[in-house]
Image 1 (spheres, helix red, strand yellow):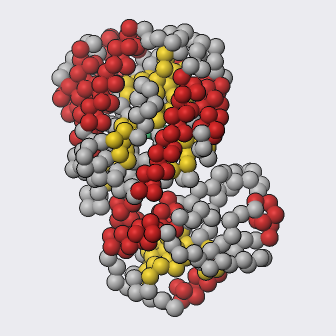
Image 2 (image 1 turned 90 degrees about the vertical axis):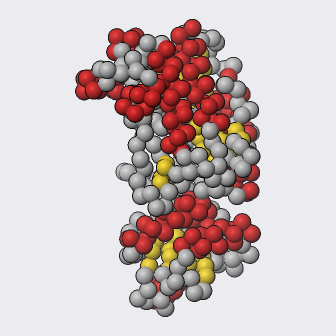
Image 3 (image 1 turned 90 degrees about the horizontal axis):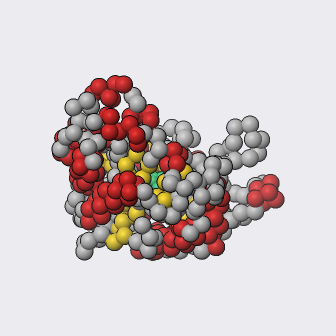
Length: 430
Ligand code: GLY
Ligand code: MN
Ligand code: MN
């Protein structure tokens, strides 16, 4: 075992500010907190192979460290202490690695023993490593995620760099998509272009779905070739130093939309524009969803697919048959960053029959995705119970020709500011 401990460098001012913010949000007296980075996860049956490792975002945010196994400890009576495991010789040989900083992880037991009897919370990737007060841990977890929501200048800069790389990826595939190209070829072109533009790689599994596959939300690209007349949905984003943008564009496989597709696309585009404009400081996220849902409800009523008003489509949940995914989520450290309800709300309320990922008012500095879409998913639309439940709202005969062939979604990332929304992904044509 090699121990090469290097004294912790002066924290960057951002890390100091973040720690102060976290401590303020917790307002602790004698309770102790551990924030755990976590460890790589082994591939089942894969011997020494692991899935790519990322530190838990709570740990990364409070330390700006990326090594596995680290634990940041907080004692309100004497501040923050970082513990990291020493690099084992085998790790140096096989993986190289960033030398540890702070105190050796082996000293954490002594740090805890010196504070025996005080309540202990564990956040980040604790995974049962430390026996803790569960109720306290949950409260501090929720408060820390809430404190992390507004992005600081360093984070916005990384998101802008991610957006620029994502834009390079979309620029590379815009002309590349054509009949005969496979979903996987499109994925490879995108991922090569973002890497050339400075990304560390894709921030999540790239989605490319052609034809019927466009109606599968998280479709894994395969060998299917694009055909003329099909829709091609691409949902992909670059990661830069842990920060991820999350962008979707829907392309006409043969170069131009059919009139029906253009009509559907126009509704989604209008919904995107109106929901983006609604991203104002103080706006309730559920209301932003409702803005998008009403626009799409109105479009589907005009097309004869819905028989009810946009308001009834929202209150009955009928719009959720076509827009089941919710208007978006936060991005930042990963493609899903710090979602959930406001600390004192406890649960995410329902709206429009959709899966909503957060329930809170927007604040300056939040970066959210706005991703309205209209999908015709067989599993939802061929379900007898739903057909009966929504018999008064949906003209099922008019839905039939669309089922299984179409998914249209457009997704941008929006920075909320005191002076209005800024679309970080605006340079990507749509
Ligand atoms: N990329 C997955 C999503 O849009 O949420
Ligand atoms: Mn996406
Ligand atoms: Mn998204």
